[in-house]
Length: 240
Image 1: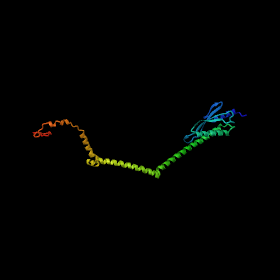
Image 2: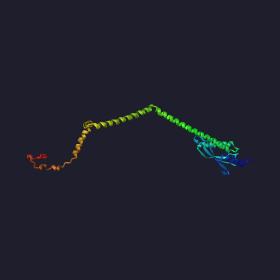
Image 3: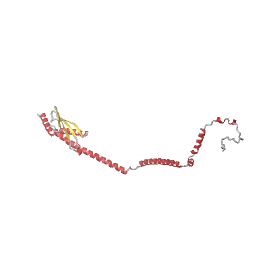
């Protein structure tokens, strides 16, 4: 009869000696512990890491231990799923034998593969960006390919811009010429000017108020037109 307790205790002692810095006992009944697994260093000392939690079942190793991802670093969700699938596969293949070391070793190899994949993904991303930049430079150098549609669009826009420019220049030239014309030339170019002064005089005349009462008694005045001193306008010269 298999002594499951004895096999489990012996494996724990071996695991603790193999992974002294990453092995942690969580509980004794049931026996539960964690082992932190780290990949080899990749470029720029980049690593992938996961902490595996194992729990012995009563009939381990004839039955698979309970396993889970306790924590992880630098792993995507797809990577975690791959690790869990790997643990299931290895556990089924090693039923009847203590297997913790085998499972941990398989996970560490998987982490090394993941680090290599990270490197490949970054190289692929860099290559894609380089190709996009190169293509953008080619387009900028070659310019836009001319088609009937974009030529007609450009032509319509160009003609509209030129029309607006001509109008603006004509207006500016007219203002310059007008500022240099004499009064006579302005009258000759703008017939509204000859009526503007007349209108101004008429408006001024209409605005003058005359007190007619001052002239009502003019007929009553006894004015002798034969008098040599008669000077109705008050324009007589001063005598010495």
